[in-house]
Length: 197
Image (cartoon, rainbow, N blue to C red; front, side, top):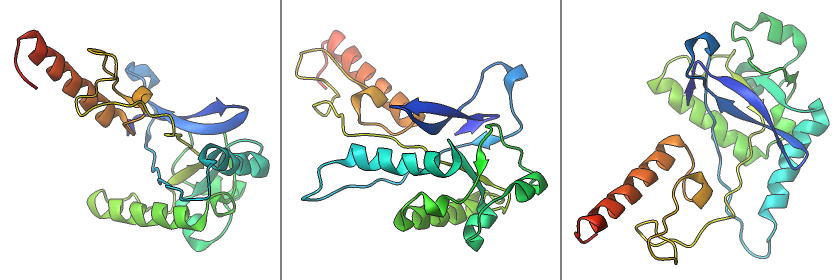
């Protein structure tokens, strides 16, 4: 989650995707908070090309909108495309210039259903999440196929070499990446003091 954050464009192998950032400098704060909802897909035999599949989904957004699409949550639920007129009436002002569109033409139904269900669930603990003017950008794609072989202490096959965070392919966000760093630091500290893990 990025309080006072911005949605930004990223280029992944020529495909424009989205991500979110916050700035420490208060002068750079936006009036929005942004976050990502990621839906995982685990594929079974005979399929062996998850990276290609993810890139293809991301490319649909580029094909339909010339880059990133943005849709109001209310329009998505009503099954209609967000257009410029509806965007102008929205009280949520976008932090990324994106093409108003229809994410249901980009994402698989199962993913869309999961996202909608999660927004309604979040609305119960953070009222306002399921507001019609909540903006959804598409798409953010994360690839977790590259995963290092680690033991339960996050140690690689090379003794005393640890891998933590997103680079290790084991975390899915800032809090998990931070926690993995703390875990490895504790293991290293215990070894330095001669304690067992």
